[in-house]
Length: 255
Image (cartoon, rainbow, N blue to C red):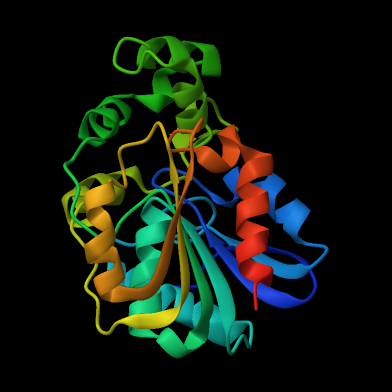
């Protein structure tokens, strides 16, 4: 699995992993601002962005994808930042290969199981007959009844590309993601504890990390700290970029 990634900057390597139905493009602004001090690898996870597709989509498999990427790029050790789905992949990788991760930053996700809250969105996307549309506006209108939030629709439609012969198609492997979704709601499989610095950053308006999750987080990530950005939701790196970057860079530069 040769993951696609964008590389910029120089210095100690930092790998950034996006969330479900996202891509490396979601982190372009963050990676650009980090790149003067670090070599940034913003990755497309399997079945996302421009990376290859696979019917297998488990956390151990995606952690191995990351290991292969590091071997290909000759990275012996790095910092890893992961948001949502990417955060679970990062946690799986850090507990499977703890000596490869110097510091771990997890953005608004815990290692626990979650209810299948994204299933209605996946169902709405699967119902689209992309070849029948003539414009993105038509697709947006078709999604609106099931997904009334316009910013969310715009985010999801970034996974659609125009076909030269007419119509549209998915860039992502939507079928494999939908079939694997129940697997992705499960907790990570921690092969070992991670005893290096770990930072969990949550949005104050998000319910993904509760106060009651902290003991189970620290049972696996023994040096974990939890920081809250009060005015942000699940997409805190986009909603409160400056505050997020201040917290993240403070953690990465801390001795």
